[in-house]
Length: 303
Length: 270
Image: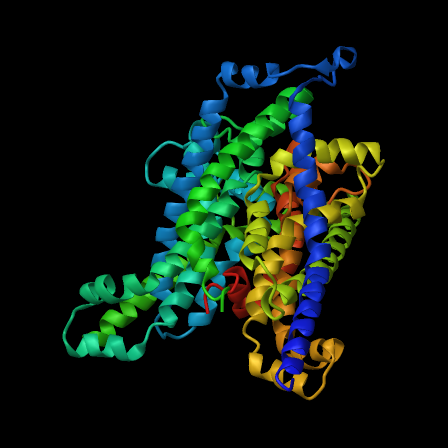
């Protein structure tokens, strides 16, 4: 009898806890479903409709007509290629540049925090402003600073965003996101055990060997996080394409293609079909990314 | 020998840092030029400062775009905090079944391309007559930032020592006391970091603002892009506008670097 009472109250309070927890999560969950999942269901519905805003009378059920159009037109594959290519290359270049910065800043020197502050600033700048500033004050053929230097070096001016839009977008994205990678990697470097590093120094391991055998394995989870978060952010990058290249020269990403179909072409049904295909592709990529990298996030969840 | 090597590395670091920062510096400098000076074929570092650019952006009504940006960013940030703090609380301190599934759901919504839901969003907003409404836009921003906020909040909350909470419960603290007197004071810096990051993301957002707003509710980022359509020279006024638009976030970021790192790594990095 004496043992039964505590168990019962514990069970009862456990029940109350679950009810309370549910009540606490519910608003966020409902809000999120209402604003992300329901619109997506509507997108699926739209994708099965024949619906062009310029020809409102011809609205009706279309079956898979829009999907057939999407796969037949032939702009889907280039868009996938652009999205995957730009994202993958930018993530890698940002990571490498970020790693270099992190290593340079992981030393004590005068004004270290000022140097770090200068380097993180590009990440804080409004992306639309960055794209505009790079396009018109750095890359411009006439007044761009980069072309001024290029010409001083004896070459002729390069039409960056018109002739080399792909590289230009990658330069811009790397400039923006390398500081973000740097911040994460720097906190990784600073969390290294000093004793291990000192022991390596005593053993005359050499800087390169120490980096390869001690620092890099230690950084592994920080690198994984950088890649995951970088991929999430860069997959969605729309501003540089919309502002700098307007989808020219192999930079027409899925996001930009969709935007073009819907708001320039005014074809709701087709744009929706592009949207559904994009989401399906993203889910595949995300599942792979999360399967391999998600465990980093999940550490500590089940304690 | 050793110190010589160190000073060389320090020197290289500085050269890289300054070069990397240069486009931002150039934007600041161009903001204070006349259009003619800004369009000079040889980059001008010495010139008579001018406020012409700032004058012109005021004439074009930048104040109202900034107001919209502030309204959208603040409203969405407050909304995100109201939704994410309780949810994260339940997901970390008060154990709930299927924590993993719920967290997975939230993070997966962040992977979903914004472009995929923009079309119905546009149609629904149009039907409800809230197209070009700054508060409708903040709802979208809140949905965009909610997953990140929950992730971040959860990691801050899971650092609260369980012993403290249990001690409070044994002392007879009810749920309200437990939250207001024990937990919130500890995680206040975390909440500030979440708020800062949500504010930054909303302030900088371009895509939704371009598509869901027009004359009344347009925020600053699309306003910047609108300078390009003008004929003639626009680099000085564009730089001035970009400086004004970017400065609040730059300063906030400079002041809160540490919180920014913790927050952006979403607690995966301790």
